[in-house]
Image (cartoon, rainbow, N blue to C red; front, side):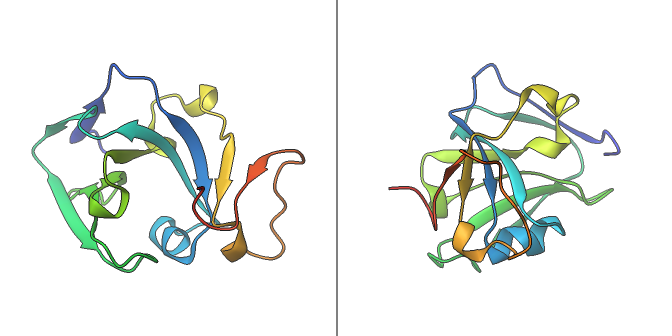
Length: 129
């Protein structure tokens, strides 16, 4: 948000996902988390205010490293042993997220009851597969 931390990637996302789990809702302060699933190591981060919070509150209990700007608090990237081989750009932090329509909805068992998902969208009760 403040521009102190930036990220780039030359790799296309492996998926664009909304997650409705309790942890993502609390972390985002919203009804869900909007994410670009990226291969681990494909996102280059620059800036001098990078901070990391190690979150172990997810279903697996494995560490999930939440990267954020210590200046403005914007959470922009997450990854770690909870999702080995993957990292997730918080799509709302893109300069232009209009192209990034979510095609997958996960942890729908924990979504808020009044929230309606797009008809015909791919939905999973928890993580896929």
